[in-house]
Image (cartoon, rainbow, N blue to C red; front, side):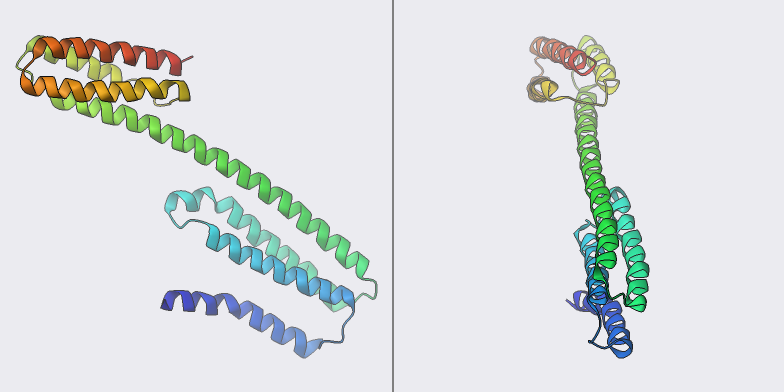
Length: 223
């Protein structure tokens, strides 16, 4: 609660100081061009604060959204410099002030949207990669835990070979491969049950099914 209050106070410092200086030096009897610049500066600052607070605070998301935050900072300082310039000039014709600052805002908005789209695509790509890595690590780990528990050298050797294939499988995935990955997990669970009960023959059959599914999965991923 206190942290939120401190953040509100900190974020209000610029607005308070800017408005204090503005009204002390310019007052309220100013041309439209000044009010337009006044509005754009406040909008740029609010965008900067909004982008900052909408960015997740985890390290991964912070790095991913860094270009967005940086872009908002750059836009704010550019708008602040140009806005203050138009406030000082106090142009009687508001059109120049409006057109220039509108163009800058439009350019910022376009670049911001393109950056957000790129970030979303990157996040999806990373998510898919993490899912594939999870499949490789988890399935190979489950197979590895069974080696040495079977009481059969033949089954242990087959498990070792399957582990090697899993461990070296492509660390990427596609939608068509999900079904095979789920079936591999299901069959590993069945394999574990049979190994624990000492059923070597059934374990070898299930392991053969796993190898076939794994081969199909890797073929789809490598296409």
